[in-house]
Length: 95
Image (cartoon, rainbow, N blue to C red):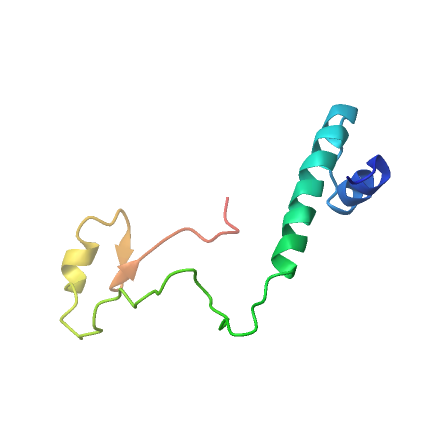
């Protein structure tokens, strides 16, 4: 089990302030996480290929087929302030 000093050191690195009860609780929880990581480290993964996902992921995007876009007049029809074929918005620096 991690000592209180080790938990407080990790908390300082993460810029967390912990109560004494949290130090006690996180000491136990972090110890369990480290124990689990140690178990994983003992597995023989020599023949296991690295993956980016735990399941096979296929590209779910549709084909990129060009098609006509919305006419400018229709896009600007409900704009509160349209000018010169575009939307006019206040400058971010304006008040």
